[in-house]
Amino acid sequence: AVEEKKEDGLFQSLTERSKHEDFIRRAVDLLVERVVFGRASRTSKVVEWSAPEDIKQAIDLKVRDGPASHEELLAFMADVARYSVNTAHPYFVNQLFSSVDPYGLIGQWLTDALNPSVYTFEVAPVFTLMEEEVLREMRSIVGWADGEGDGIFCPGGSIANGYAISCARSYFYPEIKNKGVYAVPKLVIFTSELAHYSTKKMAVFMGIGSDNCILVKADENGRMDVNDLERKINEAIEAGATPFLVTSTSGTTVYGAFDPIVPISNICKKYNLWLHVDAAWGGGALMSRKHRNLLNGIELADSVTWNPHKLLAAPQQCSTFLLKHKNVLKEAHSSNAQYLFQKDKFYDTSYDTGDKHIQCGRRADVLKFWFMWKAKGSEGFEKHVEKLFDNANYFLEHIRQREGFRLVIPKPECTNIMFWYIPKCLRSCENEPNYYERLHKVAPKIKERMIKEGSMMVTYQPQGNLVNFFRIVFQNSALDHKDMIYFANEFERLGSD
Ligand code: ABU
Image (cartoon, rainbow, N blue to C red):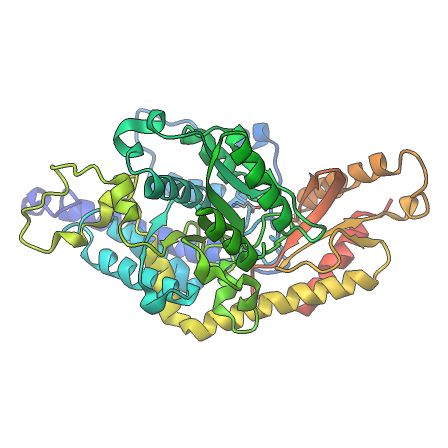
């Protein structure tokens, strides 16, 4: 009874504590055995497809007034895992993220166990310094002298691209902070027609408007057409608008194309525009001496989005926004909330970095990435990236030779490969009037079959006037050339008439 009364932090009593400890140990065992390792083998399914009504039947989703037992909770964990997509599976090649890195996972678990919020040094001392170190190193890899500048971890690449708009606007028009959009001219942004949709979305969110996010043509390889960029800037000026930002992309979402940064930067200099490089996807190539030339000129940018959860395979979510300029983030976003960012604290309050963000509470996404970096070293990331490019190139050359596959872009630049799979029944029909209509239906049908069997997950999409095609993404360096053949065989099997 005495023991029962002892307060013990989070846990009400020592008896309670031992119950919780037992539960946590069993839950972690279940995670390790059933979730992390139990589903990663090539012979397990990528997804246990179930319709929404079946999932509702299979998992008791209702929350109730009374507590569930630990046994029931462990069973819920198993059910949640069973019906969730196994993004760690080698054949989950559907998105720009995949796999589970053991060190990243432990970093993520440690983060969650510590449950920090990174706004002030007093609440998150280690994470504040860790962010400073990792962001400086990333800026240094971008090519800014001594890693000088500024940066933040963001909740996703879209938000990072939004920060670019906000920082660029504040840099040229600091009065926007107090007076709002009413005090500035009609501002326009330029980005490629193949850029991620977030730039347009953020233009809407920030009161600039989607019509004022002007889309620049891309060439046949998906790279921004620099002549069209300059033409459109001049047209906008003639129409009375004020260009202030170009968002160039290093690794477009669908084609993986790298816009030519050096000529884009020359145009930005000529017209005094902020240059943002959205390297959310392709930024990881900077870690490879062999492939970093894809981002030639990135050091000319004013700001960069780089998501380690993409090409570098850090766990979701790990997105960064990096700047060459030191004070813009703070000038644009600080609000000096006195209850949190007191200036008369006993320590150096420049370590209270939270006021640079638009969020208040914020996860410490840095730890998992820092931990991975410690575990592998930069050399480990370099090897990882080179393996991805090697696999992508192997797959590309394999399907180039193989009957039934047709490439969308002959020489993709990143590790996403785009292609149509043409079933036998369509192979000699190209001149028939409904050929493209029929081809358009092939990818959704193959996708349905692969999901229902759980044999792999590869996404498809139309693009411009091109009918549905597949985009396979290599981002898991545990794959090898045999897996590349597996994928091609699977398309052939699933796509048989
Ligand atoms: N930035 C999100 C990319 C989504 C995807 O294609 O995986």
